[in-house]
Length: 290
Image (cartoon, rainbow, N blue to C red):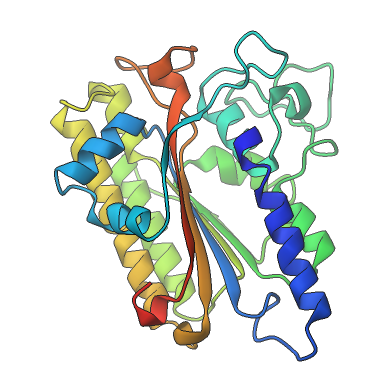
């Protein structure tokens, strides 16, 4: 998505920092790190209400330590060549590549063979690589990890360019909350031994709750799912505080989603489906309390 194009200059700036440093850094970027948290199907108004009701204290603390926009958008430019369905395949592909469907060609959640421009939904890897792919080519020693509750991200996007990731996995479990729990546990286990330069973590149960019972701020099932994801986020943030050298690390934390929802669905271009939150927290040290 265009809103995410600033990520690429960010990584370029970090690479320049490393290249111009006169001493060997502890990480590829002089102890600068990025945590990107994706919460599938998170409506802006639902996150606002979750924060106001005390259901999302960890995300609220991140917002208070940085900033947040409630009016970012998914779905491309209305009526423009960039317009795309507000569903997860094109949404996450746009987020991770920095371009819309008119370039990456992913229009759904199918998994056609790659780089077939005349085949609907075929991911154009050569035209739109994952930002991790670009970063790894620019800075080969960069450490990048991806843990996704939605298997499509792992089995299609990441599998298309596995050399870009030092660690990657998908969530395992029968239900959405089971897969989110599995991803949280895998992330915590990974952080026990490794502090990556870039960590991407995706949670899915808010989207699952929306499909099952409705994307609605007055729906307790949907709001409880957001609360549970917030708890997982809190545990990951606590794990970063315990990492070796936490006092010297600076983490840029980014939180966003792929789409909203209306009723029990999404995919269209209504404000409820297009409007999404974007939360960037300024670089801060977990070892000193963020």
